[in-house]
Image (cartoon, rainbow, N blue to C red; front, side, top):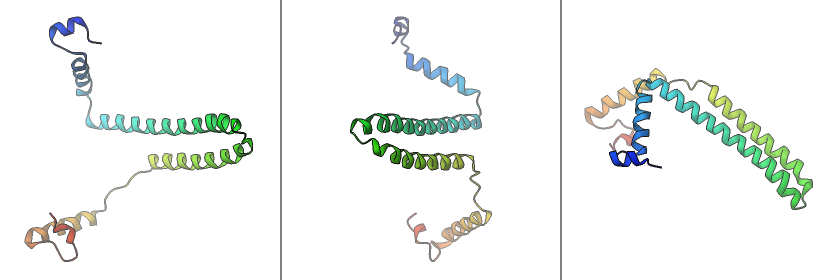
Length: 133
């Protein structure tokens, strides 16, 4: 809610928030901001995966199937879903912890050679994707 004093001064709460955030992040390096956003995205992804498994196990397997009279399906569905969920979580963790590597030097040399050939007189033979530029 906008304060009466802010309305009289012509300001708004959104501009106040923007200026506060700008002052807060002004002292941060680009690496720090990137680290924060990356960790935030990872935490959000893990939270979504945890919500998914809890909702499925507690709501669907704990309430819906028994209410529908299908108690015999609870254990097989639990085993199947939770094993797939564990593989998903394991893959996600491994992807987060694995170094992505880098582009090989020979790729940079290849791209530079293609650019030189393109400047000299068109794309090299066998590289039709460069003709569209």
